[in-house]
Image (cartoon, rainbow, N blue to C red; front, side):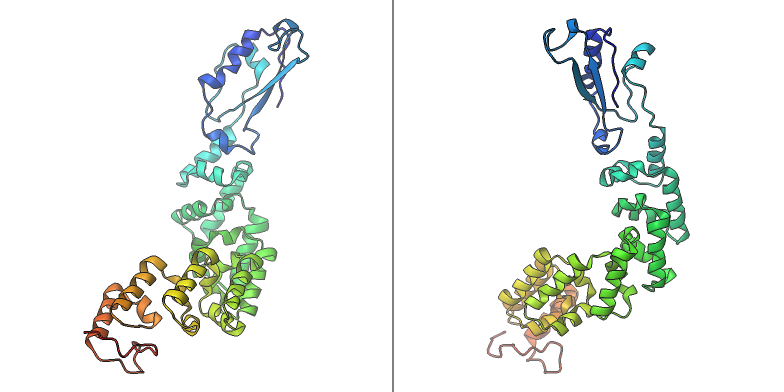
Length: 358
């Protein structure tokens, strides 16, 4: 917005008004309104020749600067004439009502606005309709608080064109049961913000057709993932490791959560440790893909080192899936007993029979 100040306005009025930011520094909230019409108001001043800040002979006849307004802070009022000349008061009633409503749900309204600025332009009536619809699906207020905190985009999702079609898709095509729908939304609220045609249905066809997962409802959160940027790169990574395509697909079919793991931060470091430090065969990894589920520092390395120190070689499931007490018991049994039989879960082909365990 641009407002003209008559040439007759004294220069000290400009100085008084420009010192507003010095006396009332803009609060952090103005950063949240970067794409909002409330972010700043541009004030244009036209000074008379004798009061121009650049000198009477300067060619600059206009001077512009920006003022930051906060919905709960107004410039100090002087006379009504000056208010009319400077800027009309900004109406933030609708924004305040929206913030109060989000606070009533137990949400951090400022965080939501910062995370997803389109919420500023979403009508309050649309947000209330969305909340009412989610309540009708069985979600409680704590569920909504958790979902909106995880995915603030959901607050600005159109109900008729995006959210309702997504729910219909989950129930009819992905075959998510009504009693499981609440759990699925709580785990992955971003499902309700995805386009059915561009995201949900292609993911369903890939998981069901390419990977061969018959019951996609048990891994419904994966439907929000992109096939090109999420599924295919991880499948290609295991193919590059030398795993045949048929076995790689079987690996993902038995453990679909692998699609959620980062290649650089999870899959690659654990695979390198598996091959270099543990010296295991690739066949074991294909048989037990849940290896990537466990923490490298807190579970894999620590237990592998204990096995090496005691001269014991356990299978991956026995070494990683057992509780701490159970794992220690297994180590004691292996150290105090003879070599296990080939049919025992403790048996491993690569066990060294010459190691002195006494």
